[in-house]
Amino acid sequence: MRRINIKTISLFIIIILVISSLLVIATKKQDQSMEQISQETEELTEQTQEKQQVQPVLSIKADQVRHLTLENGEKTIELMPDSPYSEEEVRTNLSGWYIHQPYQNVYSVKYNPLVDMLYGIAELKWNEIIGEKENLDKYGLEQPDMKLTFQTEEGEETLLIGDQAGEGKRYAKLTDGEQIGTIAEDVLEPYQLQAFELVEKFVKIIAIDVLEQLQINYGDQEILIEIDHPIEQEDQESPLFFIDDQAVEEDTFRNLYKDIAGLSVDDTVEDATYHSPEATMVYTIFNQEQKEKQEIKVELVSYDKQNFAVFLNGKADFLLKKDVFEQMLKKILQA
Image (cartoon, rainbow, N blue to C red; front, side, top):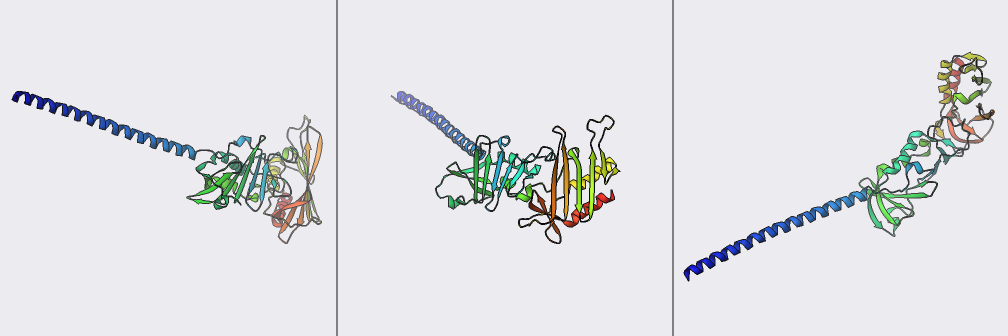
């Protein structure tokens, strides 16, 4: 009996040890499984958040845009690659785009700001999606600070920018969408420029290879600049340059023309009244294919003691400093 009891007890102890070992192993496996599930859940959450953060706001791509409208609550800026000018007149336009509003005339748009706006589309991404909200006024979206419309040949998308959301973010919403989200404020900088920061400020810049003549009148002064292009003339390899019938060396003229073409406006004007101009600049350009000439007249009307109002097509949007214009004339006469 004794031996039997001892054997029974020993067997019972062994069974208990085996069961305990199996329980320890099962517990470890369960803990590992729970830890793996927790880790996978955390990774999935991070991936979801990351995916949400990199979600683009617009479906439109930079190369699809054909019309940009920027509204900042005060003025509307309208940009597009269409203009009323001939190819010869706008040959110097690097961006290929033009500003149609808020000015009366159409002007070339600077290259760098335009590139920043077009390729900045890819930087417009949701930081977070708040969800569908009925009270747009709470987020400043009922009367947004900015309204950006990107138009393609197929359609358009408009983004509303509302109040600041803290941490360098702004509330935003697509007009055709129900969801409200936030966007990093720094990616909106290209679209916050004013019209005068976007427009090329040259009074009138015409490429030398299409310019045939420029006549400048200022008071009693009259200056005639002529360029004799080597068109179908075998004995002339390069253009000839003249100022008041006096031949000028090519290098001298090209350096001088930088000052003429670089004549730039200084400020905007909205209340200029047209009257007899104090100075005029009449450009004659030549279309070799059509064998046609075109005249472009710039009229400088006195605005005040310091400024001319620059009239193009009978309309003035900008002011030119009188002393800047006079300095240019002196350089021409010195040449």
